[in-house]
Length: 125
Image (cartoon, rainbow, N blue to C red):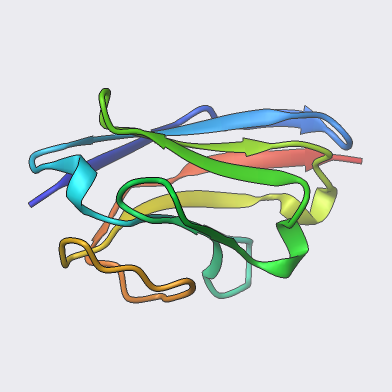
């Protein structure tokens, strides 16, 4: 079982940057694809981005392409989401997630086996 802890959320003005981190422990981080999701008030959770176990492949939802960058450091068991040019509509609780099967890559999926507790991102206009 993997434990995931997000950090880096906060309040930022529109147009500003923010970087989220997800620290993983409990299993071999480098064997599993990872993803970021978000949930805004009154809305369903939505996929944001995913990264393969090696980091060689990434995928983004259209609304964040060109603004967000997902990355990972397998040496420190940490995944990141660099968010630039933030918009008020990016306001949400952001969750990191880990796949349940080793060496599986799916560009876009909601089927992740482990989730963090979430970190709040608020973008003011």
